[in-house]
Image (cartoon, rainbow, N blue to C red; front, top):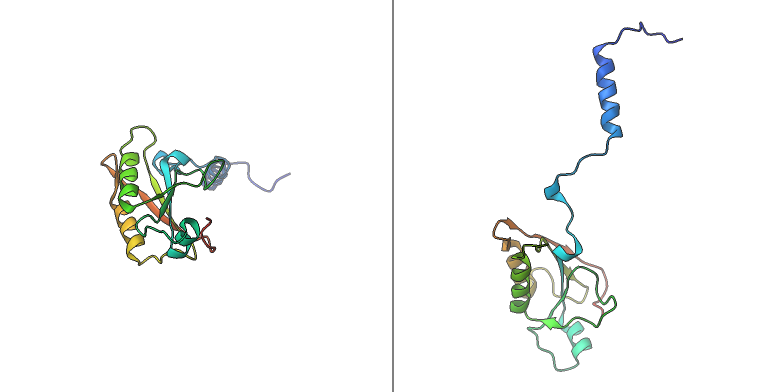
Length: 153
């Protein structure tokens, strides 16, 4: 037998509500859903050494951006072409203006042999991405990834 009086108190209701709250999965705000692969863009910024390894002695220093649409580099396809900053901007604008699955996230990848964050080629990409609006309304999420290794060829 219990030691209680058998008469419910105000605290009993609070304890029950707390337990029910813990047992229910928390509802997520639909606006904070993580981006799907089609709504994200991964932009690798390659340094001069990585460009030379990939292109040989004939490098175009303006073509240092390698873009992946969100499904990981090199999965079942040839290495993506190198783009200029203007080409990356055009791609981002086009993707941000889509009605179906618009661009919501840009991940800037900096390898050990990539230019540093403050360098012009990285800074200009970041500034453009942070000011880009999805369908003219909300800004794109921008973050950095620094894998801690040199860029793959």
